[in-house]
Amino acid sequence: MEPKDRLAHFAVTIISKDRPGIVADTTEVLYRLGCNIEDSSCTMLGGDFAMILIVTHEKPFSKSRLGDEFKALQERTGLAVHLRTLHEDEITHAKEEGELCLISVYGSDQPGIVYRVTRALADRQINITDLNTRLIGTKEEPVYVLMLEAYLPPGMSVDETSAMLEELRRELKVEIGVRTITPVSL
Amino acid sequence: MPEQKILLYPHPILKKPARTVERIDEEINSLVTDLIDTMRAGPGSVGVAAPQVGVSLRLCVVDVSASRHGKENNHGLMVMINPEIIASLGAASMREGCMSVPDYTGDVERATEITVRFTNGAGEPEEVVASGFEAVAIQHEMDHLDGILFLDRIVSLKTGLFRRKSYK
Image (tube, each protein chain N blue to C red):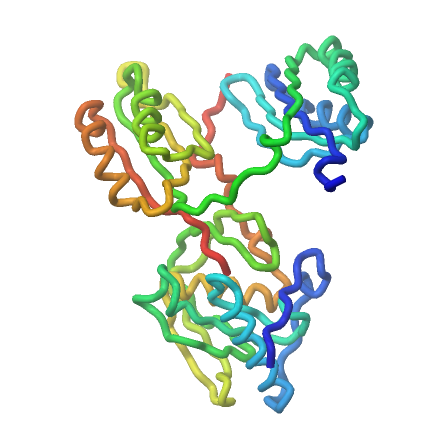
């Protein structure tokens, strides 16, 4: 068997009212079960804390085993857990070849900023890898900020991407910046 | 001399301060050739430091002239023996990756302009004022001489784009 085939992969999503100890509680369960955390991203959102983890365990290992352990934690602390078994094609990810860029969007709050911008990107095969949004400003003048990182398809330039978003800039009256953040190899 | 294998973290030499080069002899000359060959062989590589090939000496090579970020502003190939930064200016962050720490990148803040004093490959003292990407590359390679990896200098998580609100 290939090394990857020996491992069962799961996506674990946790969301909880924020407090110190959520990460420790969650990873204690995983540690006791002998699971490895392969990749994870966790952040505070509003008054909640959200965790997404890709975990592995030597086969045979069932999702219900994981579920039973988390159920106890769920009952004790009230955090919400969602588990999903990952399939073969979800485990490996292709190496991206295009330019990595950061797109910043901000302006007066209005419905549809995230939708309109991300639809424009999706229609051009621009693949978002990270995204976060925040409502700032005052009650009288709320300002919406959207920051995302995305891979452009090979051959597409930052300038082209910026020009392509010009119509949206005018229509939504928001600032949209596109700049390269392709890592430098040293 | 052939290119050398780049050591990967957790090789302990990568976290160890390197020794000063006392004398430029045949051994140092051949190490310089190896470092240049290794840099040219690495895809998109713009610099290699001696500890990365397993030699704990204060020596690195930098050449950003073929890279997209450095082609407009560079000093070509530089062999830097016992380099020292004697002045630095400004700060900017760039997303860096390192051949010794594959599959990971992070935003690192570096001075935007530096004055470096070093002994060159011919054994002569030299002083260079570097800016932009060349300055970043020199600072990254020189960090290797002190056992510092870019991981030690990451200034923000990639999602930490703006300061968090405080939630009541």
